Image (tube, rainbow, N blue to C red; front, side):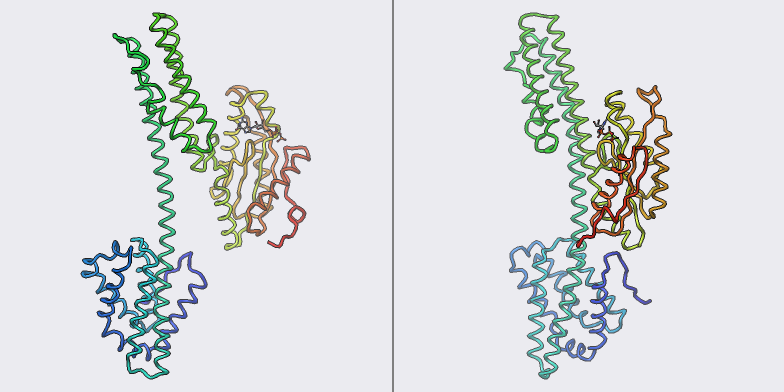
Amino acid sequence: MPVVMPHDDKKTVLREIEQERLVEIYQHSQALIRRVEAIITPSVERIADLFYTEMLTIVGAQPFLNHALVDTRLRLSLAEWIKQLFLPQTKEEVYLHIQRQREVGNIHARINIPIYLVHHGIRVLKRECRQLLIDSNLERNEMATALSLVEELLDYSSFLINESYFNDIIINERSAQALRMNTINQGLAMDCERLRSLLFDWLRRILTSLYQTPAPTLQQLPTIFSSDFGLWVTYKAELLFIDHQQEVDHLKAQLIKINELVKQAITLRDTNSIIELGATINNLNDAVTHSSWFLSSFINHALEMESGRDPLTHLFNRRYIPTIMQRAIRISATQNAPFCILLLDIDFFKKVNDGWGHDNGDAILIQVGELLVTHVRAGDFVFRYGGEEFLVLLNDINLDTATHIAEKLRLLIEKHTFYINKTIPFTITTSIGIALHEGHPDYSVVISQADGALYQAKEKGRNRIEVANNLLSNPPTTA
Ligand SMILES: Nc1nc2c(ncn2[C@@H]2O[C@H](COP(=O)(O)OP(=O)(O)OP(=O)(O)O)[C@@H](O)[C@H]2O)c(=O)[nH]1
């Protein structure tokens, strides 16, 4: 059965040229290869011995090459690998040889062998093969071509091994990164539940002790600062949530408040002020319940931000714009399929907030997000771009169709009945800027064109769509 080289996305023109060159070498140098094979093959076991003796002296090589492993497996495989270097004759056999080199690279990646060891190994092999050729009875001219042939064959193998090694290492690194993120997130979610339950354990202990006889003194009770919850807020929260200083400060203020309430409760207990003690205990309860709620909503919020989702609308937030836009530009270029950006902004949204409160404003933002997501195609993306601004990426579309879709979305929102306090019917309008991606590799160009068009729509009276005049808004650049 003929061997067909696997085609994958990463296959580059350079790769194809390299493959063809290798086929050429094998096909055109068969006579010489046979002579070289006759010189080198009888010594492959000795070369393998020398190779491992030398490699085992290198610092850092031991974990990959312990003596038992070398003795039972590696020496034989290396000897075999050297022999196979001279075997391919047909194109199919060369392709098989290429595949084998890539598999060696995959193995190196799986065991994460340092690349300097591989380089050094190839150097040792070159040196030993060179010496065998020099010591042989090859004629001067033939010797020169034989030396460069062996050099080239080993270089190709090294190139193929390292290429797939690096591809695999990158994939491994990406998965490791995703795993690390997941582990951190899962750890946080678990921490959160544990901390909440430990916080209530602490409260139970304080409340019980208030009615104990003999009554423990303030000094005998664990403070909120020394509780697991307090220690986490003081020492860990700040580190984990560098971008959420305000929330961390709020939790710290809660600790101080809880501490004061405990002190107050002890004094009231000691002075037998039963009624005031009851009120203080209620306040303490509230403060602890609030802290517990705040902790979990804050952690969930932070996790959502981390995961690239907007916590309010659950749409993608800006974090994923670079990745998704870069990908859209790449696909658009390879498939010759243009895409468009819509930038949509709710008109006079400040009035909604001012007149009906932020909660109603939030509810409208959530619904607008839902309307957008349910009325674009599955392959399109909707982002919450800013406060009351949404970015829609319409893939594989021309400007006319995108303009129709923008008008459809504008009408949809205009005709939609929103409800204030879930009862009072309410309508809103939006303005939309549209821009066609015209091939610029920097995605921010098309976004700023859509932004310019949105500005025009606002200027011209709102509740309308405008198409970016790219020729005007995008002067020619040298980039
Ligand atoms: N409820 C709520 N309001 C938000 C949110 N993010 C931003 N906003 C509000 O959105 C409003 C934006 O107001 P402006 O930028 O003045 O714009 P506008 O009132 O929509 O007027 P035009 O855009 O010019 O039509 C402000 O009141 C912000 O507080 C949010 O997450 N929730």
